[in-house]
Length: 234
Image (cartoon, rainbow, N blue to C red; front, side):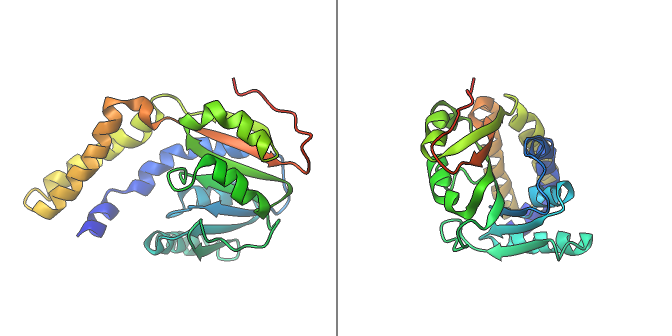
């Protein structure tokens, strides 16, 4: 029942409202011919499929949720992208790729699973020299980001915070509309209503404090040495 309810929420369709920010972050990157991209925490592949539109490279899409990867497989098959997108079922804490394997590492929404500093430190070895790390993180990372970016020998290419109400307007309000529709459909199903109430609690938290969900994109470049010129995050 829970999987069916969650499927009917159409989170992929709602999540697509954020692709404008994915595109903005990608546009900050220089042109790279046939890049090898590691998409960490790809989920069901909403940003993954957008990256496939934006580049002619190869994408390794990694997640530990097999159901989400199965959804991504369906999208890959539908768009005939089997040669360009490969999926890997793996925890982001157990990645064993060779050093300097990727031109770009892309990670949207994994900040709750790994600290900002740890992603800078642990994923650095996977990037080629002068490769790029793109992170979508909690806004709370911003005050200490300059120091950490320099500490782990990256150069700040760009950063931008999402609008204060972006998560509320683009995600949680559409999600609430879907929850309300499903409440009517499952009004006589207590188990379903319990699941929907859990979703509503998350929505209410953001409605009561929209700033709680604020986030920021970082576009960083791995540097070969410590001769890094910091770009101010003001």
